[in-house]
Image (cartoon, rainbow, N blue to C red; front, side):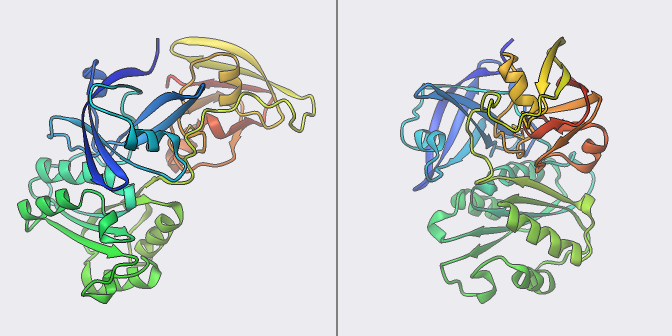
Length: 355
Ligand code: FES
């Protein structure tokens, strides 16, 4: 059974000069019920090559619509096509919503959520903000949103409207890299010094329940580091990485010119209730490459260790990941791996996508 489903584009709204908000109606509504902060993985053929790309849902749970924000990336085939050629009535193919960039809702608690977004990192953050404001009536949200210029701020009007609607519960600090603002602290790079000042002069971290960060990796590390210095622990900080680390290309077939020692691993893969036994060369070929090479419909999107679409669990044997930007420590301890990054280090490897 295909894990991709058709969705009809019902509306496209231009948000900034290089981003659009796409409203979608899935044929299978049940499969596309989402949790705030999740993303959809789309696939499309470009000149014979299948591209897969993940875009975060920007709608809240009570918006009654499924919407994603797509910012055009320099040289990005999918995002350029979505920004220039996609139109209402077109049908896209996507996997059901995925991702764990959220905390369970707690309507009875008056939590304070701190949000950090850079550029198009606002999309999942907006979904969380919209949801929390309606579903957690006592919650407060502080958003720190970094952009180059005013003109490049995604969802600027929507954020203004939300601020007006939830005056005492939502505050938004725009940090602009290039456009000067009245308050000097809000202009320039969001670096350690600026974050230190924000946390001492503007944002009281006492009582912050969770900090959500979505942006490029280096910035996320900087923000997380300063949050820790100011007393937050790891469990209070949630990340969603996006950006250049996601090439959006199809996975390559198993390589034939690698460092081949001739050693192989007996790989057993369970997918959709069916188990296949494969021989995996121990030459750097990943589990995902081997699975796709054997025509298994293994799930993947970024192939860069970012999105976790390719997650599976090791049931027997051992494997190591080259890169992991997606799995949390407890998942790794439980045996989960990103198959796009994972190579065997034992002669036998038993792995399941179904757990
Ligand atoms: Fe995205 Fe493996 S396909 S992490």
